Each structure stands twice: as structure tokens, then as C-alpha cells.
Amino acid sequence: MRIHMICIGSTGDVRPYLVLGRELKARGHEITICAFREFESAVHKEGFHFSPINADVRALMANLMNGSTGVGFLKQVRDSLVDIIDPFLADLEAGCEGAEALIGTYLGQVFYSLAEVRHIPFIQTHYFPMDKNDEAPISSAPGQRAGKAWKLASYQIGYLLISAMEKYYLADWRAAKGMSPRKLEGKPRYDLNGHTVPVLYAMSPLVMPRPAHWGENIHMTGYWLDKSYSNFQPSEELKAFLAEGEKPIYIGFGSMCSGDMDDTLQIVLDAVKKSGVRAVLSSGWGGVEIPKRDDICAADFVPHDWLFRQVGAVVHHGGAGTTAAGIQAGCPTLVIPFGGDQPFWAARVEDLNVGPKAIPRDKLTVNRLSKALVDLTTTKKYRVAARELGERLQLENGAVIAANIIEHELRKWLREEGREPVLVPEKPAQ
Image (tube, rainbow, N blue to C red; front, side, top):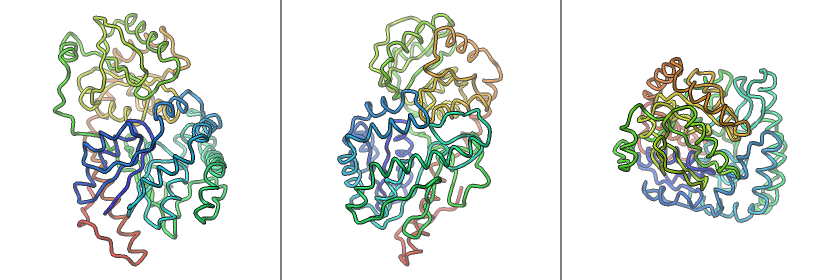
């Protein structure tokens, strides 16, 4: 079956789709991934078709991840899209050409509309909570530590704001396609052309238990983590640094590229020296130059699943994929959240006792970070909890479970329309 996967986001968003796509391709499906041009070579390396989104992913991420939450975050999304919405939607349409089914990360009702007009199945995926629960508010909402009433109410407020914003940038496109306008709604809409949309959470119930009241269409599969980099060969410099003395810690902020990354680097450098730890620093997309020092090794791209097994602890921005990789590797974790869903993952790290309380980027100082680094690397309960949880997560195979569900749901969807799906034999659930 021709399955097109649309992924709006950075490396941590795209990499799980590469893992899932690999599993689906092994079952005989033809995979196309629609993503920012930054990821073209990675997609082609997997043997998938690639359809580009011609926008500057770094600029987009910088706009979205500057610490805003709630209404402020949604305004940033709107402002980021307003000047590119027409070519952006055109790229998405091109990414759907020839698709027999769509899988997409969350972007409101945009992908639903693309599937609706084509009368093909759509499967929604999430990396963080977007369905009402009392464990956490909706992504990007403030109040991670607020009471259950706020957490539940945040979903209704969030979806009302999201649907209002969609009327701003999606109404003309739908009208041009002869489609009715979307309604203002305070909850996710899972009906599409008479079908119920399946929802896959690429999260582990060991990290956040699946709420019992979620509908049967909502599945928590476990993480889609890459296990293909075990033969990675580090540079001689990194190899020598890892072999010296005690295990270093990893510090990196992935795709975060806010305007003060120079200041962030200086805080990190001073805190590493003050705390007495050794650190592997990932430059990421910040564009900053890391100086040469005996207690620091600068590294460009190194697969997290390999590197995190060589270090004693990890410090990062709290992206969903990076958090999952660190915990699965059994690493005590310190999160420095910038925005988006990162405060949620920071709270989960603390609640699971796999690391200390997070330090928001706008509260980061040399003293706070140096104290946290000492706490991170000397507190036994973090090491024990991280190791035990990591061992349990190693037993999960989220991509296989997700592929099983996808094939089952596609059969169900097509048979509801009286069509016999052409798929490989369905595998039993694992």
C-alpha cells in the first residue's frame, strides 16, 4: 500500500517516522515521507520517497521554541505560518499525491482535510499528550503542576483556540476545495468521512500511564526508537575523551536555536568547570563555536542510542525523542526546557525520579546549573531509577506494535467502505 507520512518538525520528530517507515517498508508498503528539506538525505537513505516542505525549519523552530506557552504559543504558530501558508499548503498537497493512506504528526485539522478531500484513511500520531487526561495539561499550556481541574479544562480551552486559529488559515483553502468550514470545537475531532480516526501515541505507558477513559481508537504503542546505529564509529577525539577517567555527561539542546544560544553556551561552559564534571557538548543548530578544553569534547551529530550508552548522565532541552532515548539508555536526566511540550517531559523526568527538577531556559544561571550537575551525577536514586526504567523500556518494540495497529486499522477502514485492502498478512500483536 502507498503510505505517505507527513512530519512537521525537527530531527526528534522525523527520526521516529524513519523507524516506523522502516518497519512498514519491511512489510511490503511503499513509503513516502513529506518533511522539511533538511531531512531529504536521511529519508532517501532509508529507501523511501521524499516530498519536500520548502520552509526554513530552523527559523520555524526558533519562532516556536522561545519559551511561550498557552495563547502566546498559538500566536507564535499563527505568526510563523501567516506568510508561508499558501506555499506550505501547496507543498503538503504535493506530498499527498498518489497516497492511499496518510499518517501525520499533529497540525490541527490540516492533515484531516487533506485526507478528507481525497477520501483516503488517515492515522493521527502524537509524541505528547493531546487527549484529555489529569496527568498533564494540553501541550504548550502552562501549569504542569496545577490541579486536575485545570489539566482537564486546558484541553477544551486549547482545542477551542486551535480551531479558532484554523479558521484563520484553513477556511479559504477548504472553501476552494468545495469543503464546508470547520466548526469551533473544544475537543479533538476523530470522525472523518464516516470513519473513526485511529490515534497512535509514540510514548510508553511506563513513562505516562494510558488514561483508562481514552477511546478504543487511541493507542499507546511505546517509543519508536532507532536501534540501527549500534555499529557507529566515533571520531578519534571523541573515542579518546570517552576513554579518559569517569564517564562524562552529555549536554545538548538539539534543534533549539533561540537568539541567546551564545549566552546559553557560556553558562554551560562555566557550570561544567564549576561543578567539576566532564562533558560531551553537542553544538546542535545553535551555530555557536565550542572552545577546546580538557573537560569538554565538542561533537556534531552522534546517534543518541549509541552516545547515551557511553555517558553517565544527560542534560538536554526535553524533546520527546531525546528524553525517550536518554531514559531508555538508563541515563539520569536533567531537562532545560525551552518551550512547547518540553515542560511536560521535564515534569515526567522529575516524577519518575530519573533526574532533578528542571531549570527552565529563562531561569538558567551558572550557579543553578552547576548545582544541578552535581546533584545529577552524585544522587544514587536517579541512577537506580533510570537504570531500572531503561531496562524495562528496552523490552518494548513500539514500531512493531504501531505497524501492527496501522495495518489492522487500514483493513478495518477499507472494509467499512466495501473495499478489500491489498496488504501483506496481518501479524499478531506483540
